[in-house]
Image 1 (cartoon, rainbow, N blue to C red):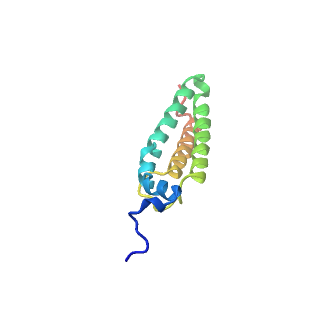
Image 2: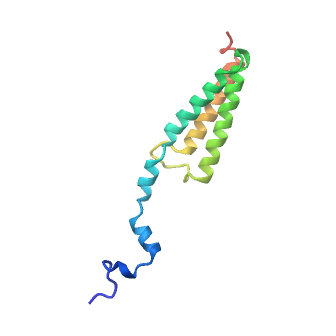
Image 3: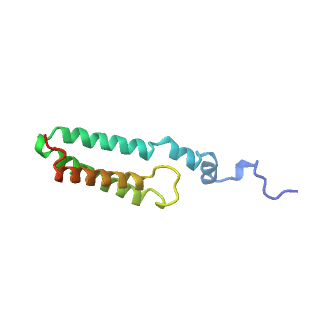
Length: 117
């Protein structure tokens, strides 16, 4: 004789039913954009906006936009992502680091005169 029958759903509360029929946590995460595609999209957007600026100011505008994008990714990583270590895929932490590194690279190249026409 069983006292707790899992097949008898009439006694389950609606909260338990929703949790049993929902999508698994991994499937919901895979359904959204991955941080790699999001990082590529934001970096492309920064490049497109910087291309609209005058030529002498373009490296500085691009570096500023990449830094701003890095801070946005950092905010997303702090609020939504898990711990920064031991991930096997690109995370929001990595996207923030890539944006900051790209901004530093553009600033360094501009200071060295590599981006002047």
